[in-house]
Length: 248
Image 1: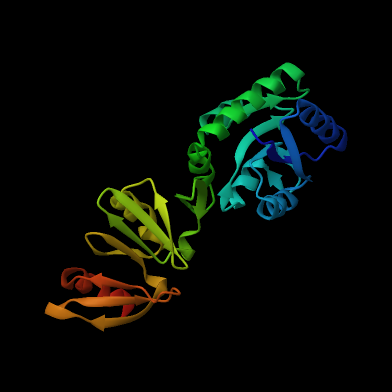
Image 2: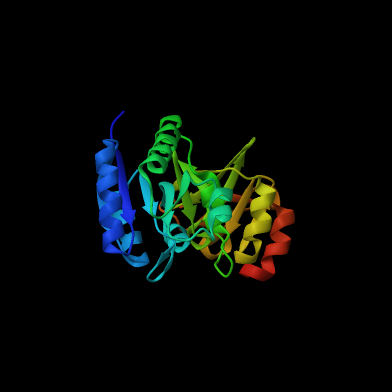
């Protein structure tokens, strides 16, 4: 198995150097980068696209959960912290492991074994994403998948949502993302953010409607402002409830 590329997020230099030395000595980890603040961690994670992030919880600019909250794509997560206050919360999110400083070689090896097995199985950290996406006081994010990665979509950037039998897709800039929810669940979640049902199999973000075109049998088509200028059918029954909102 190739080495796991990891980003180390730790604001205390001695602790960071010790963890890096232990990871390098394991022979399993390639250090992709280091960060010591929320802002730096987010920037490095986006730039380096690591397989995993060894993440302290209490860091300048917020906390480890805030780092994850700002990322569109989530790596595997191993929490490394001096505090055990967040252990239950971390394991509820299905993080790979939760290490309390000072980290022993035995515990680190155990965590690395879990990490390797998780990556080999290619199981996206979806539970982590769900908890991060629902942080109190923050707008919701749509947890989705694309090419084996977990993506956190900003509802404002999603143009529409479609259902194809049992599969549901959110669309952003002409690209589709698989969402492990029902269309009804997404309608309940996104309704307060301007998403409306246009027919049985689609939701549309009203903010991304470019035009409304008449169609056959008294129905309509909504043209969206995405790169594909996607057209979504709007049933006559649904049109009646949308007229007041979008003024056509």
